[in-house]
Length: 233
Image 1: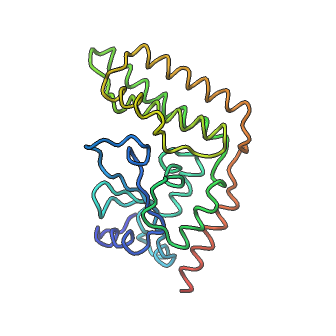
Image 2: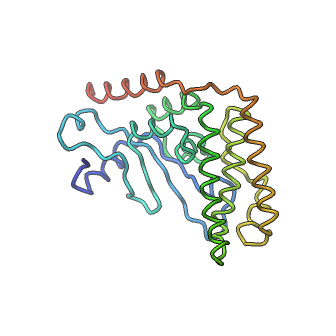
């Protein structure tokens, strides 16, 4: 169950955010004049709120436009599963707000990483590719922005598996990726690029230094510590 009062949910974001970053095209180095400012954040609901029948929300939209935040525990669960969107928050080059507790979260960000990233990044990209191919088979035109981000996701995932560090800014590929977004790149070339990136990702897995599993103990220890401190304040 979630907090029934929408304003109470927004207050959790206003008063308990520990990390707020800009993601999307501005963080990727792919922004255009029409790009929104996509904000993602993490709030740590005070532990006493979990003692009630009605629990704090696991996520909240707002209060700013294009702003979405996760409660800390839900954020950690998704990050431990190598969710690409969530992991980007921990490596975004544009940090708008970070508290001392948020700094603690960033300090353990590599504890979330594991070889599961290969599967999740590849799965997200392949799922998107199948949808785009479906558009073509049905006589439509693919959503070129989605094509661009499918390719960007493979680039970022390969870097993560190969180097153990998430690459968010792909500005060095800006011209080529924006040409894709404008529909100026043929589908055969896109398919060749996609297949090459998928091969690179598979090859990176064969030589990765990432552990088989994330460090759940470290992450859970931080979560428990933050919860306890919210009670004793």
